[in-house]
Length: 388
Image 1 (cartoon, rainbow, N blue to C red):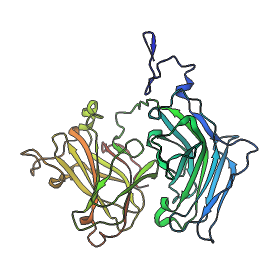
Image 2: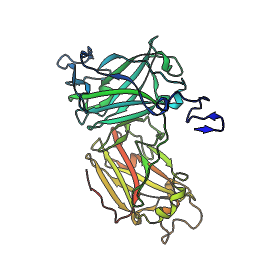
Image 3: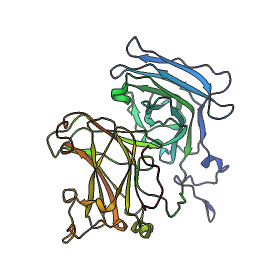
Image 4: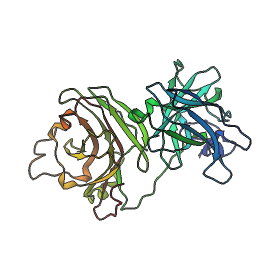
């Protein structure tokens, strides 16, 4: 954008006129296969009865090629398989990782292969990575470079884009839990780095008002027991996986709260017409039969319900009239939460997700894993697809 005589770039201000707009709008590919390339050697650690392979196959577009990685199964962590790939050095005008995204075009070949660890390796061996979620359809997954964490004992504070030398692709037991012994496979077509751009969604007035999306929102899951979170392939989009090895006595639990007050300030009239809560979720562990979902109004009054889960993905639709006052989930002003009171969707300010020991009295100490793709408010008259 030109402001007077000065060029302003977003989100990172580089303070000069770009050579061409593509420097900021187009991804710069650091890995893609071409005719004549050979499959890279695969390293594998695990039981002798299992193995891992790599091959080059046709891609999603005419003339494109992809790297296919397969493993017949894994043992206990840290059993894994992986490859190291040379990359092209990107020609970017900034080293500020806060203005850059990692873009991975990939897909899984098995339902249980829900993620892969992508690492960016510098010339001195320092590495930074992210567990990229996968779905069974081709997708371009964008990850802010500032979200990459140090790998393999790296002491550096942040990735140096100009020092990139290799791409690490690793998948293994720690990603797949109880499904680690099953076959796993994935395909990667392209990896790129691109400047962040603002995306403005144009929505139909009858479109769902999404309160939480694993694909769009980052949350911090807290609790009184250790909790592990990751993004994985969901039913149609990316899902947030929340995993705990077990709870203590009630009220032991884990939870997250996502504030939406400012995001929907201009859509209060549309919110007032919503009468249905839609939750796309599933339980990975059969003993995890419920989660608590609470919608919190601007004055702090919480309204919620226990949502039943199956191990299959569901689009669960609940009339807002079934939400009850959740006194344990917050402090309400005097007069709120009475028998004649109700949840007012136009005042929604936050969504809170919680699950804990009291929901599974016979199985509290066992492992519990849930996956949540999206939570939205809709009008009941809107058509829907039902269970996945």
